[in-house]
Image (tube, rainbow, N blue to C red; front, side, top):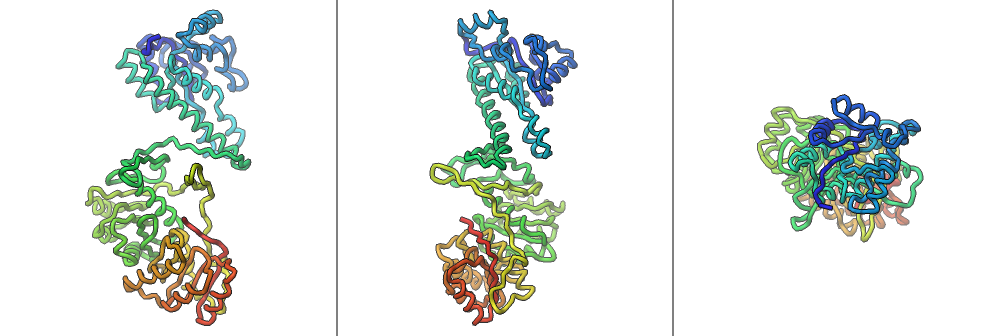
Length: 508
């Protein structure tokens, strides 16, 4: 058989009808015989196009409330029969099975149903059986059949058939088959994960069918792509294409800013916050965030939880930065920020990332729940004789949020809801503290009265002693060391306050 095939007969059975009319008109113009079912048949008839009912072919009506319509040898035989096989052709003729050259089918909206209802009966009814079977059958027999498995392909197919006189090539049919298996694989994954919410079957399955091409990966010599729905998260208003590293920073920025309800501005670099402040006005929040570390802010990612006004935008515009993410922009502010053509400006839509974290390790994948624990005053266990004052309690909460979002080993120094400095990604907690103190002193931040947060316990009292001598007088940490008493005793002797949270926030 020739690799180029004429479409003589098509089976069409779809849930979504958007854009289908153009494809039906194209098939009708090339005298293609159309088989169809239910609502799709009625739709085709309403266009004035002739079609045949599948039930007339099979001599069986749609039964069991529509659960069984196409599951019949006369349907699947026509799709799976090898048209270059003498024995297959003889059997098809013997059982009066017509060959099918094109299958157009999509699937019930299972994921949308799960997202919009908890009614299990409704969810179960949106598990497609016939549709998936038709897709797999058409894709398996791509040598003879073109499988169209999504309404997003209609326009492409119309153009292809118009340009090629109603014919398809083997390469085209194979490409559509690959897309079809991607559709069925994604669908089965969604169903499995729904059933596995409580069962926790020992299998890892994840699928994303939104592919966002990237110029390259972490470095120019590495290929890269993002799979997910960026448009659901934010709308790009200006600037160059988002990169792999941009997305890593945006991920860190989104999780950080989601922790704050007060007016807050943050600056991130390499997934760590280098400047952040919560203030009564956005302009002041920006000024104090930038003051934290104006050197690291260069080329950073900016994020806020408030609409950016003209005054704040004017100050921001003095700094070179890669990205800004905000829930909105005043018109004049947006025009100011657009003055740099490559600057990426994003408007937040729905900043709710997934609940699971995936990470490749060795020849497998690590999966864990996202760290959604955020401590409040009620979680504090004051373990020292000296209790933190009210303003210190607010700073301790603030610092503890920041250390949760900082690479381990991590130390955060904060005061008046402003990041003074942090020590990030160090191999010892003492090194992280020394790094933080050195940075704070370099930028002439007054550490007297500051608080310190640690992402894990102190195995010795040395860190507390170093912090005390730098001016820190309140500490928040998880606790849990066999030598906790050493740190507590030092604080008692030095009139420092220390609280335990009981929760560690490692971030490797």
